[in-house]
Length: 212
Image (cartoon, rainbow, N blue to C red; front, side, top):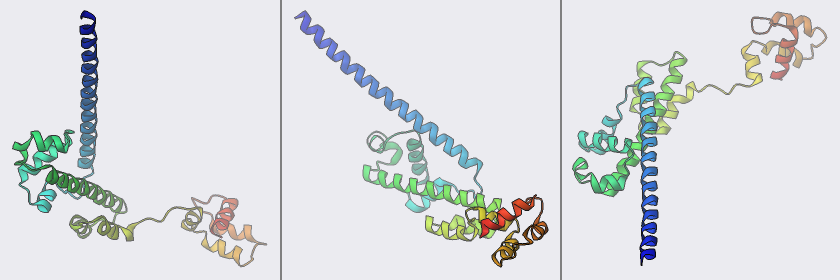
C-alpha cells in the first residue's frame, strides 16, 4: 500500500510539475508578447509623423465605446488570449462574446499594420523632402493598403543598378559615343565626363559600358 501511495504521489508530482512548466511557459510567452508590443509601440510613437491614434480609429470603425476599446487593446497587448478575455474579463468588455472579440482583434491587427505602413510611406516621402499637408491628409484618410500604395507609387524610388548609378553620374553621353562607334578617341572623350564621383577615365568608360 505504501508503495502504491508513493507511486500515486510521484505521478501527481509529475503532473504538478508538468502543469507548473506549462504555466511558466505561458507566462514567459505573455511577457515576450507584452515586451514586443511595448517596443513596437515605442517605435511607433517615435516615428508618429501622421499622428494617427489607433484607439480612435478602432472606435470609428467598430462603434464600440472608447473605454471598451481601450480595455480590450490593453488586455491583448498584455498577452491575454481572446477566449480568456471572453470568459474572465466580461466586466471590461460589456460581456462581448468570443466571436465579437475575434472580429475586434482582426480589425485591430489590420489597422495596426495599415497605420505602420502609412507611417513608413510618410517617412520615406518626408526624407525626399516632398511630404506636404495634402499628402499627410491623403495618407491619414486612406482606408486600405491599396490606397496607401497608390499614394506612394509616384514617390517610389527605382531599384539601384549599375546602369542607373552610371546615368545618375552623368555618363549617358559617353555611353552614346560608344554606341555610335566613336571608340578611337574614347579616352579623350571620357575626360569630359570626369567629376567628383567619376574620378578616372577608366571609371567613366566602365560606367558607360554598364549603361550599354
